[in-house]
Image (cartoon, rainbow, N blue to C red; front, side, top):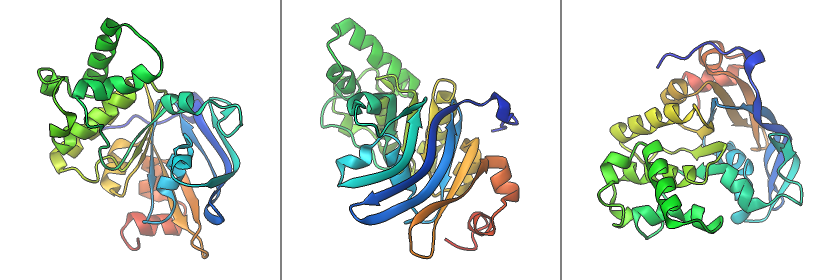
Length: 266
């Protein structure tokens, strides 16, 4: 798909990362990462396995804290607010910065109840309003025509690609401002992958998206900006280079970026 040239002066920042150091316990996973994730743009995070891509994206809505003890140095600001301040409401933060994982992680309940889940735990709403939110979210995830006649059947009966789009619908139902995607197509066939990529482009009108991907062609197709991550000599993840996707893929400044994109390492 043809992308319009980006004028930097027209951009506003949704998430600003400043000198981020990330630790799992005492093990340092990321060092000195600074970058902006721009509003209503798609940012791809690329790099070899083990370079901290997933760690980085999970640090943007503090979901990494659900897995193990972590420590953060530096700042992650979401529309000007440091998300690592003590007074931050994590449930509200994770509704505003949604997440879609590598493998669909649906609940063992109906299609309808999966999408309504986050809406219900956010507070009471009348059934008619929830019906409207569920329908709108499933339509926005480009899934409505495939599931509208089986909303009250198990979501686990859907195909892998449909399950992933339902996970996106579930995230959209609580009206996030940012959607984080951690290799959302890695378990999908090419047809399902194409549907997800088309959906990402559609969602960009109303959302800021950051996507981790191992697929160079996908990064080139879907993103406006690309960040290349790698490890240093001590195997700690760092961001090597960040820029407009067209620039990163055609004339990257760092030799390591050029080698990775051309397939000479990684």
